[in-house]
Image 1 (tube, rainbow over the protein chains, first blue to last red):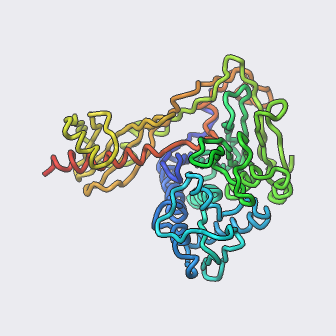
Image 2 (cartoon, rainbow over the protein chains, first blue to last red; image 1 turned 90 degrees about the horizontal axis):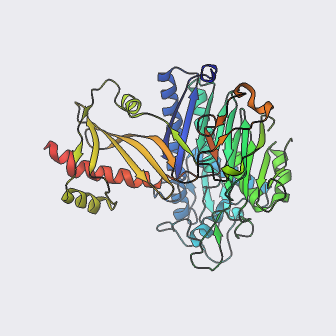
Image 3 (spheres, rainbow over the protein chains, first blue to last red; image 1 turned 90 degrees about the vertical axis):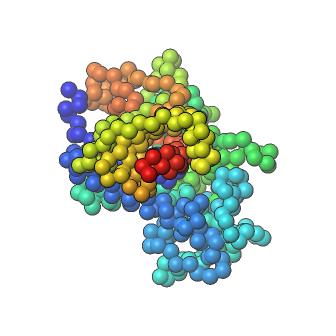
Length: 300
Length: 177
């Protein structure tokens, strides 16, 4: 009688943020649930359009093209994400850094933006991003920001806000593994690690919280002869720990998303930051003794 | 995070595989109701000629592998198109609603399947976790609906939509005139 004990749920999915975004609403009448899901998708689409590295019309593209010449006014959401990114960069002393766009382009992970001045000379960092009044952003030198390490988490939080606004009391938004749950119903999430096959199935049970996972899987080198991954240390601009998987549990998805990158870059340095945000990181590396998992930071 | 915990569930040696992920979001009928509520949809399946397939490929830059166009139209000139895209590791069934001008009004993924790995059924659960599920094996995909750490690929859907828009312009809309 298992199905009778669970509230009815409606789940839909769309391709957004470069992945499949699924929104599940429980315990609401179908029409209300669909309406709420529509609003959640609209919220995510808005963030996608504002913060895409590739789309010419996005705020991120405008910044990369113009902000080194003159201040650029951005949407309040973009400004808020930049403020979160700056805060995470400051607190992690650059382990998280949104100015890594040029390195990701160099590695062939992102395509070079059109008509954007080439970052050159001394390597730029988050210190070169100035957040002014009236949502104005100025780059002190040419640089390419990429908000891929934080915007997805923020988008999930916006979708959750949209669901709350629609009166939804139980839901889950999952943007390709960055997810947040609403309500007291426990969600069970399997974590896919960078290493397969698995002989242990990692499962997170989560209530009213957010989870983000980043895997540092390696791919073929395009030109350098070194392996590259999709994650870069903001401080060293080198690839982070190979074959490591980091899952961070936090109250908000924007925090969880950003912290996965900090933990991937430097686990020991990330511990105080995890505690500050009451977050926990579960880290997997195939060479770690036992199950391969260890836990870092937070209230354990 | 006090409201969360990590459980490491041992799998039997026979299950040494990456868990496959498969999820159904909407049936075709549910998608039709959602996207064309109150409208009557008429099945309007088309079989593409070799020349049409070639023209669609040239126009969209996307290979056409299936000559059948699973289409429905409504009385206002709108279209409901059902399509499948196959990636390196996944296949996705999705539906697109076009308005009378041929613009995408809505897109919904119907189901998502990974085409590698294996289904993992989990027979041995710790009692404190099993809770109300005690006595019945939990199954990935039905009892555990979320996966984290795998960025589910959707790039092929974008290509698929481009192919469908070319199909609309060169075949469906052309036939209306």
